[in-house]
Length: 432
Image 1 (cartoon, rainbow, N blue to C red):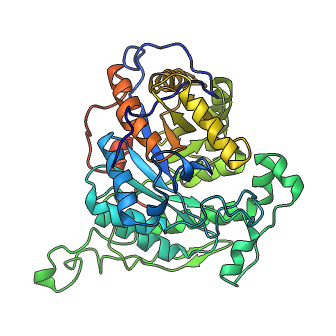
Image 2 (image 1 turned 30 degrees about the vertical axis):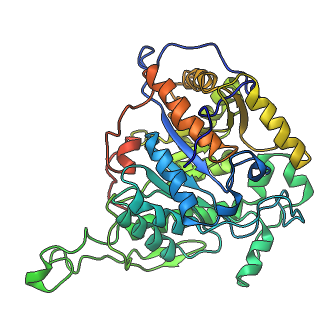
Image 3 (image 1 turned 30 degrees about the horizontal axis):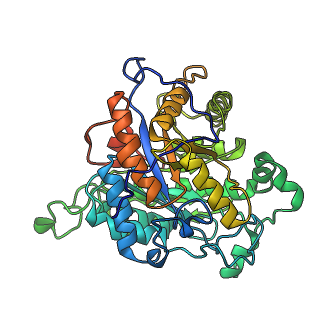
């Protein structure tokens, strides 16, 4: 993977960088977790036109292999892969007619499966749709990824917020967003509440299916049976009967090496926070300031209480930031202005936008980590590179060394599985 002359850097920032803080360890805080969200040429719609972009390679295996191996070089906890059932659009309600932006993606689970044997430590977290995809198939695909990656699979379930997605399948209609719904994330999630209820059942079914098998082939040579004759036939029916789903089980795929691959949920409001608290291990949130961070942490705590999540299993909370980075002060802001001009509009996104240097971003991350909302703090950040590979290189070769110098990020991987990276305990037995 080619790198810029100097590993990217930031200058001005849409999020104002805070003064430098003492290291995380000096302040008694744990090291940060870092994830990167990978999507196409980057999270800016005009990223494919940026210097160093590789638009002709977006649909090749080599492009994704380069990105993920670079992320592993930076010792990141995990990468997420975006996916959806329809072409990208500027509208939440349906397709647009833009021909000057990237449209189309490769399948996220298959990308993760392709790069799995090329990496050894980094977590691989594909996004999948749970509105129009059978949980039995999801559980098998993700369990398979966990096997092929040696215990590094994760999952980001996503509902289908666009009613036109259902037309690909012809089986059902889903709620259609109207103009008034777009006023706030709470309005959107309220309109889509039935889909979030269904998603909670999907998460429960997938987890039960993962737990419906023993660890695999043991002593089978003597017994002639997959489980060696132990514990019956090594499988259990899950017999799930919910409002939206009825699934018998068991899984046809052997138990994942992690038992339960980590489940991550992107959430912006109460209903998705409760989905994360009900069935997730990690929640990605999108506060735009230190004050908003405290407020969101409070909402996550309230959601966990509302659904009865055990206090001994707290959610990991990562804040999302869309980043443009450059070592030269001011250059990242100028780069954003150029891309905005090419796209015909200022960049608009759910996450906070940061433009600046890796050192300034380190200041901001440590300042946000110090925000305490009744004992709950951010565990880490999921960074969305605006331009690929430029901003990814700035993260791995600029931000990571800066955080390491401050004692706020690992200097080597200490675990082999994604659950290990995240410090998650071994999974409890599934409810059956």
